[in-house]
Image (cartoon, rainbow, N blue to C red):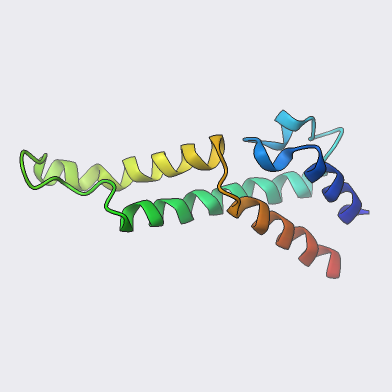
Length: 109
């Protein structure tokens, strides 16, 4: 039953929204376990994006007129916030794959 419910929620457009509730899920469309899995998948996507952005040089102190040690100390917080916003507002597809794998893994048990 979880697989059918999860697939119906995915077909409603949960994958392209910031949360299952925006797609009409929650109490009437997604089980509590699936909602938690979706939230954790979005968190995973944000962490992954933060790592990608960090390695791409976002948040690196510019050589000319940089903010010094203070800027360096807080650059990772800004990078993580950018990644969280990207994951919430316009998913790149990682959360969907992780969510689907989590749901399928639970159904195998």
